[in-house]
Length: 255
Image (tube, rainbow, N blue to C red; front, side, top):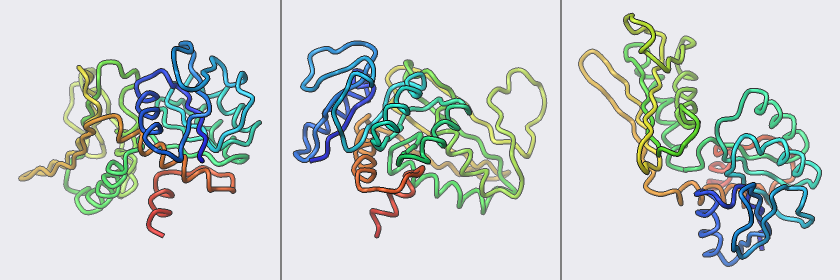
């Protein structure tokens, strides 16, 4: 039985993870962490990680960057692997994650969807083939409750394209403030926030005579919840400390 701790259990993604865990007989939620209170749940909920004295095979975090310090302290002290699915981390927080990964296994991804990670590889290949002659623009769309912009996934896609280009591109987020023609060495990133959009990402390769668009649309939050549970299963079998990603999970699935 895989026992999980669910950080951010009262949020939309936390509820999605809870629903999927309830449908899997070999997975149970040992405890939840959430600053918003306990509510009526089938597992104990603590406002602080320090309140939980039990053990678990892994922690899944879908909360906020503000919760990171307490979670890293809790997981490193208890030697509990952590799946970090939250976005919007600062560079200082990313450095703290790297430091914690020297002591415990940590799985971090801005997007837990297997399809998005296939898209990342397609973007790398397209940028390697087209990048010299095509402009690259990324448009991401999310619901009106999302706090960070651009999305972590949009930045992952930009980084994937940049890794295949023969130059270091500049990420441009706002064309309103400067009136000038588009620079060749740019990747434009635009954000849309509205309604209940779960998550749409388009990577546009615009040439002089044709446009190629690579797209991914999430139809429900369950696709991210399912990926996080897969990551937790993967981490529960990992003994070596380190920073793990969806690429490691995909590789483990293929071997």
